[in-house]
Length: 231
Image (cartoon, rainbow, N blue to C red; front, side, top):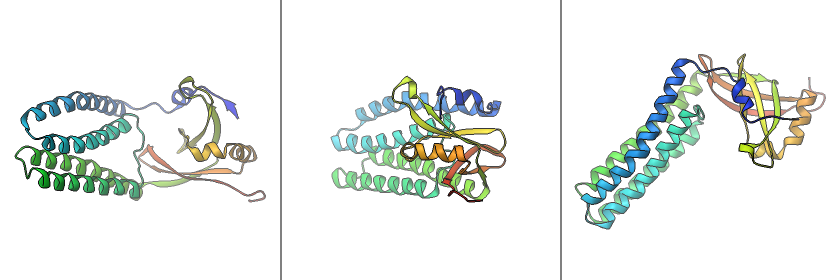
C-alpha cells in the first residue's frame, strides 16, 4: 500500500475533450445563476404574499427542491454520479411526489388555493419532477446500453483528504483501456487490510459497467475477493 497525493489521480486521468469542458462551464454557470436568483425570487415572492403560511409552505418546498437542483448541477459539474441506480432515482421521485403533495394539501387546508402560492407550488413541483424524471431516464438508458467489464487492474492507495489526517484507503481501478477512476467508502475502509492482501495475491477483481461510446459514464457494480486456490 503506498501513500499518494490526492491530486495525483486527477492528473493521470484521460483528459476531457472540448465538449466535456463546455458542459462543465455551463454547469458552473447554472450553479451560479441558481445561487443568485433563488434568494432574490424568494424575497420578491415574500413581499407579494400576506399570510405566513403562504410564505412558509412554498419556502420549505422550494428549499428542498433548490438543494436537489444544486446537487444535480454539482454532480454534473464534477462528472460524478452520471449512472445512478434505478431504485435510487425512483425513490427520489417518490419522495418529491410525496413532499409536493403534502405541501399542496397543507396550503389548501391553511389558506386555500392562493393566487400566487398555488402556481408557485405547481411550478416548483413540475421542475422537481422534470429533474427526477430525467434521472430515471438516464439510469434506464445507461442500464440498457452499458457493457460489463471485469478487471484486476486495481490499486489501493492511501490518501489524505485535503491535507487532513488520518489518511483514508481509496480503491483506484482502470477499465476500458486507459480510463481510470476511484472509489472511497466505508466498506473499503473496513476491509482495507484484506483488500490490500488480495490485490498483492492477484485475487481481487472489480466489475465495471460503462457506456461503450462514452466510457467516462460508468458505475462500479461490485468488487470481489477470490478464494485462495481459485483458477
